[in-house]
Every structure is written in structure tokens, then in C-alpha cells.
Image 1 (cartoon, helix red, strand yellow):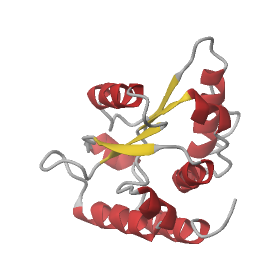
Image 2 (cartoon, rainbow, N blue to C red):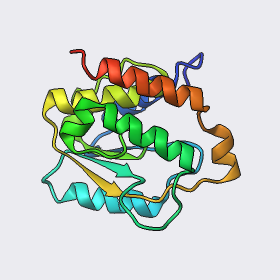
Image 3 (tube, one colour):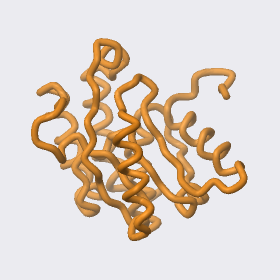
Image 4 (cartoon, rainbow, N blue to C red):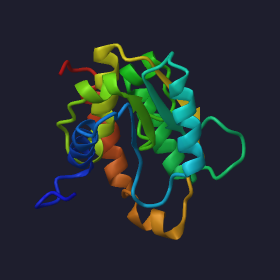
Length: 174
């Protein structure tokens, strides 16, 4: 499935969720980055956590485990700052608001309406969780920082823009 032109990660996720929703029996939905950073093992753990039924969304966090493959220092600073600047993220108790590994139920998929393009969709996702009262938790995950995934990563300036965008949009109603 492709868009005729690159509409950004937010549009890709929304289109993918809409397609998945149309599949008979679809009850569990997942998003993940396409650069090989996320492990299937973590996805399975997150699906198991969702299956307990006490949450609607499970978001991966790079900050829930000691050791492991931690983000580079500058990225850790930007990610932590972004989570701290997000009033909604803080209210929801989230430590990694920009993690692309997410698992959610049909209730969320049916109401998900991502309109922001690019990486800003992560901020919008947090806003939607808060506004809809979806129950959310985080699950520790290990992100694999390979040379390839680092080459596909966002430049630091984009990270600063995401923080600024999250700071502003996190204070505005949708």
C-alpha cells in the first residue's frame, strides 16, 4: 500500500490503521518504525499486556530498563525533554512520547484520526489518548540502534522542532 506522494509518517499510520480496521476480525493494532529498530519480542510482550484488558494502548518506552541498548546521549536528552514538555504526556505518566512502537485495541483504532504529518503525529497521538480518555501504559522495549536505523533517524533540528510543536500543541485543544 502506498500513497501517490510521500505524505509523512502520520498519514502512513492513519492509512495503515484504516486498512487494518477493514479486515474482518481485526481487534489488535500495532505501529512500528520501518527501519528495523523494533523487536518482534517486544511487540509480543506488548500485545500480551494489552490482552489483559485493563488498558486500551501500550506504548513502548526506551527508558524502562536498566542496561540494554540505550539511545545516544543527545537523543536521550531530546526525548526526555520532549516528554517533560508535554503536559498531556506528563499527566498520562509517559516517559517516551515519541516511541513508534505502539499496540492498541479496536476501540482506539475506530476513533483514531491522525491529521498531522511527519513526526508530529506522535504529539497528536498523545493528545488523542488524553482527549478520548483511553487507558494507556508503557512497556519497556529495546530499540536497536544500527547504522541503518541511525541513518534513517531524524536530524537533531527535527527533534527540537518536535519538542517545540509538542509544547505548543500540547496546550491547545484539537
